[in-house]
Structure formats: structure tokens, C-alpha cells
Length: 463
Ligand SMILES: *Cc1c(COP(=O)(O)O)cnc(C)c1O
Image (cartoon, helix red, strand yellow):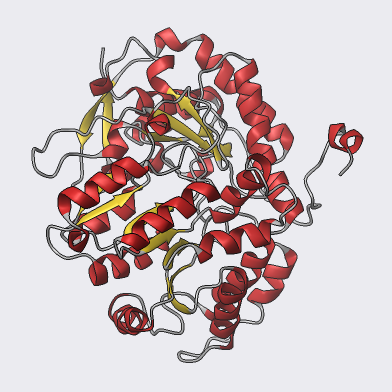
């Protein structure tokens, strides 16, 4: 594209052929709804939400091609044609040799954790993800964060905040012994850091280091295409490389992957475990039968696998990924212009508001991010989610809250669902909440479940 063309406005690279009406209920109804939901946006009914930015998980709009694929579902219990299409798509676009389908990402995390982690192992990774870490712990391992320090600073403008700190990683290997580190867990476009990418250069260095110690790399590739987009934009030597080729190169530097296909791969449900090692694959293939389903469907219907195979090819399309990440950048820039403290640089799948900065009158024990999410919902029916002390859970040994450095709420943009006008409405609402931030009260736990508490906890207002 010429520099002049680059300055022109851009539009979503699709036109809309089916619509789903949305509506905003009254402020009074919203106040009642969030109170009944225990101030937890996960417990709201979706019909009470106007613009749903809870998550980008399973919320994408499928294309006409994907819907056509749904009609081609081969619902055979064994050997569905759609499984072979999916396997071929994964081999073609990601290069992994073997595929075990699962119902979604955590199904794959469960299997790989149980197969590779033994009691008292350590699993290093570039910042934790909730389900990933929990499966590692349930398998007897301890997660160790080896991401660069910049990732924990919401204001640091490092272009690749998901990079691994090689010193942290190597000292862990030296202290604990390579034999107690079953694999390195690398996520692309790290969710908890604010949708931040890892660079190809860092990944190559990490590969060289881990190979020296014989430690394999398992890739959480849930948002690999978004990471590839940032590499293309920011990393030297990649401006003219296609997203497809960058994605393939990332995968080639790892030994296997878990995928929540509900994100980048543009489907409403699905996932897989991909492996290069034949023996490990055989074990995983055997295990999936116990927990998910036969090894040629793993919890997905045939039609779901077909939609996923097509979604994988669409996810690396240049126009698609530019518009997808572009929409997130558009919203983020509006908030920066309005003076709202957000995680910088703007991430790939959502905009993360810095609740610690916005609500300095609340201590972390008063759950500022949880409270901010509830307040934003009341203002204009926009649903976001907490990514702070509630999501971080408790230390399994001491029972104390984990206090993460980042206390955020995430405005997560579903793929191909909302227009630029929706983003304008969201930006106005956030600016309004920011203006009246001093009135936001803290929250306390009213009910707290044992696992992944952010999903089901209930809260009450304090002060
Ligand atoms: C969503 C997600 C998962 C878990 O996948 P599910 O499909 O929700 O089970 C794992 N890792 C990352 C980075 C995710 O965003």
C-alpha cells in the first residue's frame, strides 16, 4: 500500500447479511440486574447487556463460508470427513504434525498437563493464564512467570511485552534442574499482559536456550494470528512477510500447541492439542477418549470441525487481521485521547483499563477492577471483565489472595461483530465513568467458589 493510501479511512472488510438486534435497558433496570448478579459481570444475563465486551471467546461472527461448512457436517462418530479437513488445515497453516481435537482450549491443557507434568515440577511461562495455570497445578506442577519485567508495568511502551526474560528462565533451569521442567509454556499475544506480543527474535533465542537443556516448548496459540500482526508491524525484517508465513514460522519454533479455537480461529466452540512427537501424540490420543470424546472429534460436532478448518484459513487473511486489530486500536486510541489510563501499548484483542490508576481511593482488597466493571455496566450496558486480584485467585499454600501488579478491566472486542459506531458508544461510556470515578465504591466477597473464582463469585458493595 502506498503512503497516501495508508492515510485514507479504512472500513470493515465485510458487509453484513444477517443482523441480531441489541437493545439497552433502562438505567434502573441495569442497576437491578448488576445487583442481582452479585456485581459480577459473568453472572449477568446477556439479554440485559447492550454491547458485550466480556470476552472475545466464542463470540466471533462466522463468515458465510463457515456457515456453508456447517451444512457439510459429517456427523459420523468415527472418522468424520470434517476431522480430516481440520487436521489438514492445522498441518498446512501451523505445520504441527499430529492433531488431537478437544471441546475447547482447556481440554487440550488438561491433557498436555497430565501427560507431561509430574509432581513437584516447575512450568515456566510468559505470564500465567487462568485455566492453563490451574491445569498445571492440578497435575502437581508449579507455574513460574519468566516474562520480562516490562510486562508488569502498564505504562511501559515495550513493543514486545510478552518476551521471555532469558536470565529468569536460565536461572530457573539451573536452580531447579532441567529434569524438573517438563516444558516451557509460551503464549502468543499474552492475554493477561494486555494482549501483548512476543517477538520472533526472542522466540528464537528462547528456542536456542531451551534446546541446550533439552526442554520442549508448548505454545498456547490461542491468539497467534494477532501476535503475527504485531510482528509484521513492529519487528525488523517482517514488514513484507505474510501473516500466514509469520504464523507458520512461530509454530515451527515450538514442539506442540494448545489452541482455544474460540478466539483467533473464528468459531463459537472448539479447540485442539497439536504435537510433533509421535509417542506423546499416541498417549494424548488415548487420553482424549477418556475426557473429551473419540480422537476424531474430541467433543466437537463434525460441523464445528468444518467451521474451524475454514476459520483457521480466514484468521490469517491480511485484510481480516488488519481490521480486527485495527478496531481494537481505534477504541484504545479514543480512550487515550480522553485521558483514560489504559495498558500501553494497546493490545490485540482488547483494551485494558488500569483500575489501580482510575480508582486510587480503593485498596486492592476492595477489588477496584471488579467494581469498575460493574460501574461501567451500569453507565451504558457495556459488559467488561475483571483481570486483577479476583482473577488471580489465592495462593494454594497460604490461602491468601494473590495480589497481581496489574489490576485491570478488559474491554474485549469480539471478532467481526461490532462496528466502529459501537466503539464510539463504548468510548463515551468509559469517559463518563472516568469523569465520575471518585463515586465508585469498593466491593467485598459475598460468595467465593474454590476454582477460577472470577467466574462465579458474588460480591457486595462496601463503604
Ligand atoms: C481462552 C484461553 C484459554 C482457554 O481456552 P478455552 O477455550 O476457554 O477453554 C487458554 N489460553 C488462553 C490464552 C486463552 O485466552
